[in-house]
Structure formats: C-alpha cells, structure tokens
Image 1 (cartoon, helix red, strand yellow):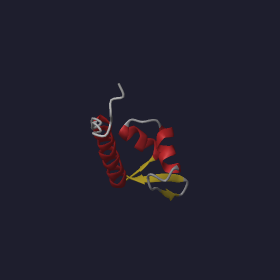
Image 2 (cartoon, rainbow, N blue to C red):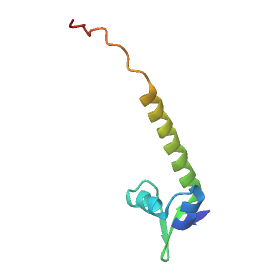
Image 3 (cartoon, one colour):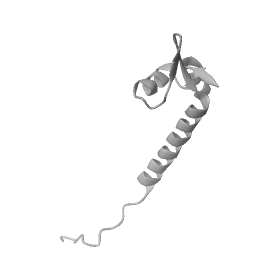
Image 4 (cartoon, rainbow, N blue to C red):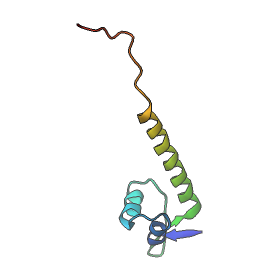
Length: 76
C-alpha cells in the first residue's frame, strides 16, 4: 500500500516538512504517480524501525561511562 506525503506525515505524527526533508535527502524512497509523490508504507516502516534502532544505539553509546585512563598521572 502506498501513502502520499500528507498521509505519511499523519501516520507518524510529524510535520509534512519533515517528510519532504527526508525525501529531499534521499533517506526514504518514493515513486511518482501522475503528479503525486507516493511512499511505500512497508518500506517506510522499515525506515522508521532502523531509525529507532540507530537512535537507541546512539543513546546507549552516549550513556556509557568514560573509562578511567590508567596512564593519567596526578600532577600534584
């Protein structure tokens, strides 16, 4: 099933401009039928799933404590 840009924005509750930005940056694939831009819902679900996975990995990385460097010397 295909969604147009407005339906896609409503589907994930983001502004239409965000979907247009993702299309412009080539992050999501589209097809053009007559004058309408369409997005495959299954492909878009995969995009959202991968994006959430990446965000979680980034959060995990940023929350990881910095290990103490054994070579650091106290200069006092």
